[in-house]
Every structure is written in structure tokens, then in C-alpha cells.
Image (tube, helix red, strand yellow):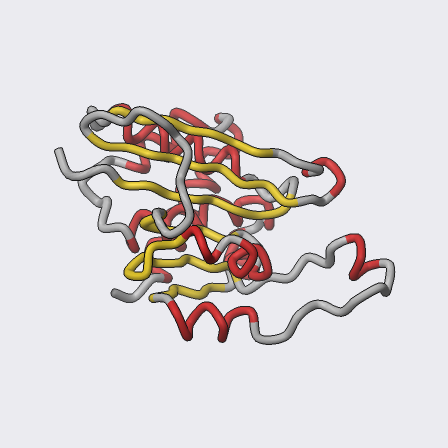
Length: 193
């Protein structure tokens, strides 16, 4: 087995970050890795920030990822990428959904959505930016955006040795299985290495 790796999945409540982390954990465990996962919901039911940390390797003692230690950040919303950027290793990779969700203060008119989120990330990190929401809508259901992002993450990390399609088929509800398999393939194809 390879050295310990870590992923930080960040988004806004309702975007599917936790289901995505469960797909990741299930696949890694099937591949024989020791895996630890931690999730922080915060005010997620009110549109607040959600973060999930996943650590895997031969032996892992904690799911907690310190600042500057994540191998990858998967941001389901672009402002969340910036919010958690200090957790990414200098040579880490970010998969960022080019998607905006107005926070409660933005929606109330107290401030504006910040410009330059993607550019700020691209200035400091290797980034794969995609419009996962649009890809999901083209597939017929915007809610599979999370699995589109998962496919991009799997490719960005070079984790093609795991049968992710089988893991997805076992993890998602049967009525959404085919849609999520197509979402995984579309996200995987969206990343150019």
C-alpha cells in the first residue's frame, strides 16, 4: 500500500458531500486501506458549510486533516474552496465546482459574493475546475452533481485501480444507480491530466 493520503470534501448543506465521502470510504475499504472519516455539518440544514475529512493508508490513526496536509480538496461550491484552501498541501490538487451558492449574509444583501475565487485558487494550487451542475443537468438530474465531482476527484488522484462504478452501484439507491454511473463517467472524463 502507498503512503497515507487525505481528502477534504467541502460544500454547502444539501449538495451531497457526505454521500460522496461515503462512496470514497466504501471503495477505499474494499481496496484494503485503513480508512477514517470525519464530518462537520455546522448549520448545513440552513445552507451552511459542510466539510468531510477522509484519511486512508496502510494504518491511519485519525480522520483529522491539519492545515497544509490535504492531498486534495473537492469543493462543491467555489467559495468553499477558498474557505478551506489553507488545508491543502502546497503540491495538492483542488477539484472545484464552478458554482455559486449565496450565503445568508449575501442573500440578505449585507455583502456581495466575492470575485476571483477560482483565480485565487489557480494562482496557488493545481486545479481542475468544472461546471458539475451543468454536467449533471445534461444527464437529467442536477442532484447527481456530487458524483460528477467524485469522478473528477478519482481521476485527479489517479485512483483508477478501484472499481468505482461497482462501489457507486452498491452505495446509491437502486433507482438512481444508472444516473450516478453516468455522472461518475462524465466527471472522470471532465478532468484532463
